[in-house]
Figure 1 (cartoon, one colour):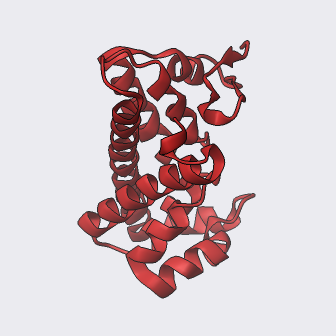
Figure 2 (cartoon, rainbow, N blue to C red):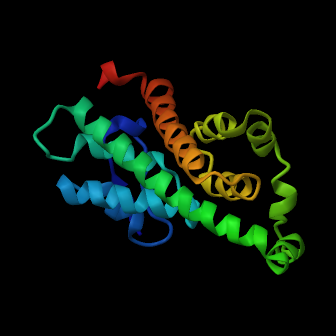
Length: 189
């Protein structure tokens, strides 16, 4: 529960885990096992944990794979994006099952946070208007939890492959936006 200092990729922020040791494990991971931790974390944050995906970027500074920093960063972005796409497909499947279940939809409408009403928000309207490209664009927004967007979109569409591709592209886009806008570009690494 104590903050773990991470390299400057997140502009001097600290990496602390409010929920236990998962984020701490991500923040301190190294080597190939570190990439596996990134994969699992990215999978989980997409369908169940509303935690930031950008927290994996500092691993590029500490992976110890014998590669240049830009190659480590590329690996982290690709592995995290694959994990997020996998988690999104899992959430998509849950959404497809929920769509078939009248009691689930009724429960969601009565719940404290009305997911059905939320699905009419700007993010999902963007996705509805522009389809899977809109979903990818919506998922490219840094620091916005993917979980709600993924679930809301999953009840609107039904193509697993397009959904996986859109979430992968959106994840890569999100990391690139973070690197370019927040960090100032890969060249500054």
